[in-house]
Image 1 (cartoon, helix red, strand yellow):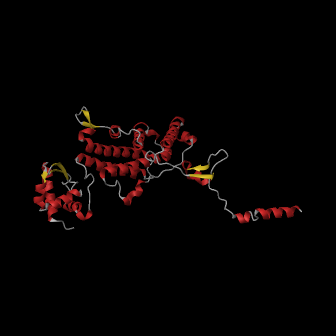
Image 2 (cartoon, one colour):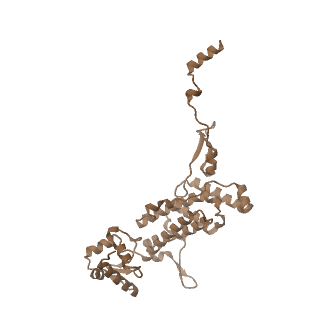
Amino acid sequence: MEVPQSHKNLLNLLQKKEAKGELISKVEILESTEWKESTFTTYWNKGQLSDFLNEVKNGYFQISNSVGISVEEFSQILSQSKHRKGLGNNCQSRLAKALLRKSRDNMLLALELYNRPSLENRMDSFVLCFCIAWEQLLKAILIEQEGEESIFRKSRNTKNIRETISLRDCLDKLYASDPDNAARKNIDRIVFYRDKAVHLLMPEVQGIMSRVFQSGILNYSTKFQDFTKQPFISPTQSGMMSLVGDLKNPSIAALHSNYGKEIGEEVSSLINDLTEEANNIDDIKFAIPLNVRLVFARNDGQGNMITLARAEEGIEGLQKAIILEKPTERDKTHPYKETTAIIEALLDSQ
């Protein structure tokens, strides 16, 4: 591709300045590129320079990501015809921008790992990447709202290195006014399994866990787009956001056989408790609801719905409930109307 001379000059200047750790001014940019100020404003407002420039004071910018990039790649990013906005173009902090990139990558990795059917420990991998992605996203939001110091602990460790606050601390800060928020409860629940019950994330629990995971992905996508003004994932890749899992709940006998009585009871308790919690909260932000049922009649004698199968019983349960008898037309099974039937009955009785 043919690269404009202005792009070559700008990249060369950025690389020299970044290597020395110096700021660059808008005046220097205009001189090197021979742009009009309106041209620079267009690039800046569209976010096409946000990968490389971060304004620290009026007319002066910090430089990043220019070293090591080719002039062709640089020019493609700046191409106005692509109307490209760099991720985090609305952020003031370079740290926030970096955290956003890492957060998106970690959530994409969580999706890729979970949707890999050959991976036996896909739930463990998903939980770890999911929690990291949320922590990085929430810290980027905190930085923009309260400054970079808001994500660091006041004390340093023995090696004099600053430590950042935990994911739970981030949740406490950002959801302080709404502690019962269902999206927050969803994250809390998954964090609990990461920290204290990772040994219970067996394949048998994926029926209920996939519902919780799916809600967590949708919550993340919404939060990510609300903050960055960009979609978490390309519309052409949106199918990745559908997590696949067996919805059938295992029997207690099978759990005892696979893991022993004690652990089997704990796995069973996890399934039952989480299912009950999802039903009580009854919010798609906590767990995807499952209302699929096959019914024989609307109500029984006491007014209760007669349920033949539920979604959580799995495909086998739904298949068992299917009635295979072919319907027959009423005129063939009951050929006589009421009056005709009475006449026929009287004639038979004579």
